[in-house]
Image (tube, rainbow, N blue to C red):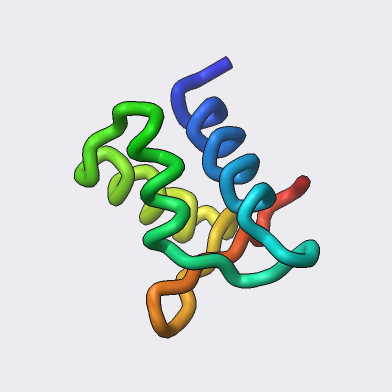
Length: 72
């Protein structure tokens, strides 16, 4: 499994754990807190989240929100 695949799984699982209902927007700050627990720097998070956004896996919303848009 590639680093990118592991990151996608980690981000997906974190977003899903924060959703009130499937497909909900979640706080980017809350997601970052979960990713921080894994010891990842903000720069690494930014790189992966931006790549995932460009690939249609996540979508950034207004007000510091993020949503999983990839396959579950």
